[in-house]
Image (cartoon, rainbow, N blue to C red):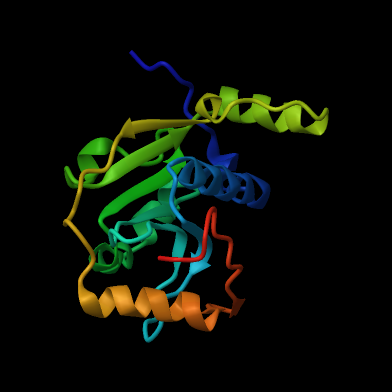
Length: 181
């Protein structure tokens, strides 16, 4: 039995996708990563990660790939190229857009459902907040892909942070504490 109502075809609206990106970013910050970034593109690559969290000292990198609809998921063939850059990888999508059996065991799936998502949007209009758990629900947590990111990819991530470049602009360096990675 489902404990949520799957979203309709309007889930791919620009506003919904923007809010989903904000929710995924906040979820990453809560996990305690020292650097959390949106639309991050590692140096010397043509890839672009929707949300990335980089931990200090441990080479732990978590990537969230946001999919606004089933068609968006089915049309994306780039995401397997993201896996060497991370220790954990998850999709964030509307409820029912991606089925668990379509993903490998190590790939996580975080869904948001229509009732909680719409409640959150209405509450924001009136200045109220709803806890993150009301909107995002981990259907399946991501498993560790590897102990740490390899040297070549780790350096590409750090170069992007140090040089302050990303796809289409500059990186907003927002560290939660200290400046070290």
